[in-house]
Image 1 (spheres, rainbow, N blue to C red):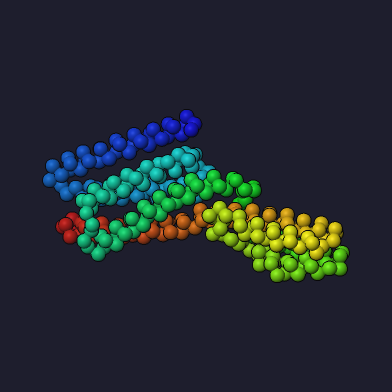
Image 2: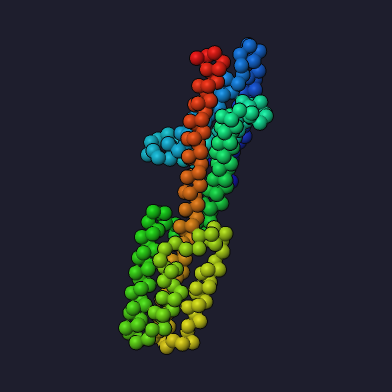
Length: 274
């Protein structure tokens, strides 16, 4: 662990100890002053949530000199933990009884759980992406797959013309055409399994007994294309998961903010503040 990482970790632990303590003291003082502490904890929670939303904005405007993405991520994690503490204080450590409060709690729990899952996926899959092949930009992977498919089809056609044999072309049509048609075996790649690749290589290798020397050269080139395609599938599967969880986390976050705004208006209306 580097010096910077240790420093960030220690600062984070300090924040997680000092901030909740300060919040508890502030709420107690607010309560002693005959104010409703739920209003203070609610405003603090809304403030923290809005700060958490800024992390998504920071990723979209990375050119601005407002701190590194790693530092923002650490801040996002610590603020997320503090928001959970604030939420439990706000509901007085009990299950909400109103329908709006209950729905808001469900959204908050969904945001928190998806955030924890997203953190786990980022830490795990970011390391796995470097283990096989060269990392490729996600949006360009379908184009690379289409290019490999064209290379495989041209190779099979060339083999049929040069050797006057349909063995490899028949094998391609029966077993490999679906594989080259697009990203495949996404679940297996997420689980770290290479069984699909080994099966395809084995099927292709089993043809060798029926091939002459010239055909074996084409078969070897085809095996190389299969391996390159499988590496692209691996990259696609892991990056798709890294991007896909955001389609759960972000909509839940904005849904929670809308419900929180409604809850805030109703809370002040029924308390006589409006």
